[in-house]
Image 1 (cartoon, rainbow, N blue to C red):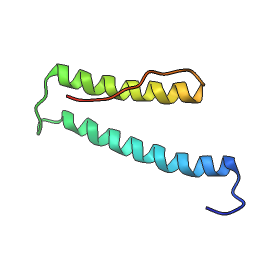
Image 2: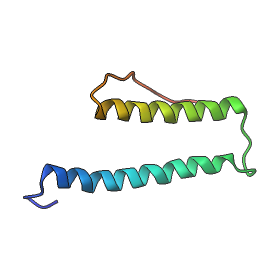
Image 3: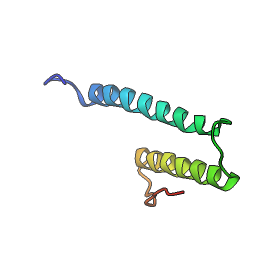
Length: 74
């Protein structure tokens, strides 16, 4: 990071890396739906709900809304 990097530039730099990483990890989770694995519809729904809750929490943070705590376990 440059000493004179603006808050906006820092945000853009970090957001690009973090969002790219998150999308990559979500794609990996999606690959769990292949025939190489076996899951129940309930397990799939839990994964989808956990991901959606996390996205909702991020959205709330950016729109300054209060969001509930979330955790995940199959």
